[in-house]
Image (cartoon, rainbow, N blue to C red; front, top):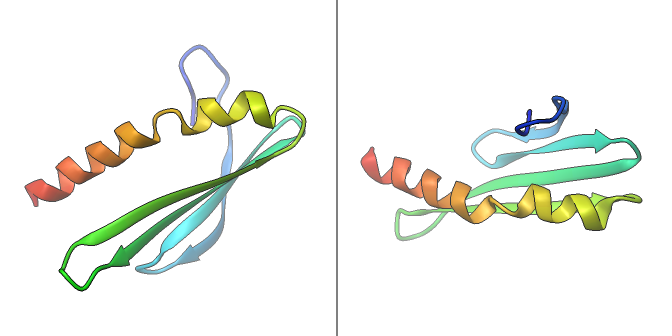
Length: 85
């Protein structure tokens, strides 16, 4: 991942569960960002997509809003793409 105007960050998949989701980890200096991406089929035939973020370390308060600030937009974009299929 490379935010505009910054060096690229390396994210590592630390858990992958087929048809359930995955978890990735990014370490920036001494701050650890773990994001869980989950999909859950619903009885209605729809699918629930959930992001959960755990941020720990000295810059957690600063990095947190940068990491999670676009989640709503990302989920809305995923919804639009899924509705086209």
